[in-house]
Image (tube, rainbow over all chains, first blue to last red; front, side, top):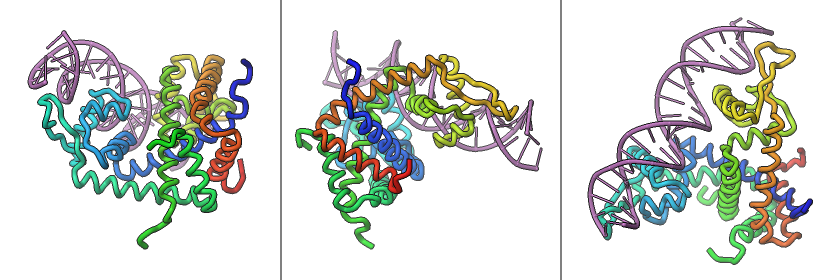
Length: 144
Length: 144
DNA sequence: TATTGTTATACTCTATAACTATA
DNA sequence: TATAGTTATAGAGTATAACAATA
C-alpha cells in the first residue's frame, strides 16, 4: 500500500492547523483567567453535572491520582468543592461553586469573542456550512 | 449590546469540540512515540527548516529557557542536534537528525491514519468543502 | 477481595531571574 | 550595552505504586 487514503492529507493538515489555532485561543483564554487547559475542561464538564473523581478522570482520560491534585488546587481557589457521595462512603462528588460557575461563564464568553474574528472571515452561509460539516464529522450517526 | 455575534456560538462550540478531538488524536500519536505535544510540534516545525533557539521559541510561543530543556531532552534521545550558527558565535541552530526525521515521518503517517476514520464520515465532496472552509478561515487573505 | 480516593515519588513542561559569552 | 543561550529554581500537570477506608 503506497498511497493510503489519497486526498485526505490536505484535510488532515487543515484539521491539525485549525486545532492548533483553536487551542491557542483556548489556552490564552485559560491563561488570562489563571487556569490550565485541563482545569478549563473540568469547568466545562462540570457545568451541568456533578461527577465523582473516577468519572471525571474517565472523561478527561487521566488517572485518579492526577485528578486528586487537580481538584485540590481548584478547591483551594474556591472553584470546586468536594461533597461526600450519598450512596457510597468511599466516594466524593465534585461540584462547582458559584465562583467556579461564574468563571466558567466568563471564560466561555471570552472564547466566543476571541474566535469571532476568525470565524467572521467566512460569510454567514459558510459559517453554517462549516458548522454542519464539523458536526457531521464529530457525530456521524447524528446522536448527541 | 446584549447578543454580540448572534449565531456564531454553534460554530464556536463545533470548532472547540473538533479541536479537542484532533488534539486527542495528536496527543495519542505523540504518546505512542514517547513524545510530548510540544516535541511533536518542534519536529513538525523543523521538518523543512533549521532554526535558532530564540526563533523556535517564537514559533512555539514559549520562553528560550523552556526550549533549552526541551532541546536537551530531544538531543539526549538523538532526535535533534545543536550546531553552532555560522555567523554568530553566541547562537546555535537546531537541526533534526535522521532519526528525528524518520520519527517525524512515521508519526505524520500515524496521524493521517488516526484521523482517517473521522474524516471518512464525510463524502469526498464534503471533505474538500470542509478543507476549503477551514483554509479560508485560517488564511482569509489567501496567503501561505 | 475489590474499589474509591489519597499520598509519595518522579519526570516533563513551563516561567522568571540570574548568569556567561559574544556582539 | 544589548543579545543568545544556559542554569537555577519553582510550580503545575502527569503517571505509577503503595496505601487507607469502605463495599
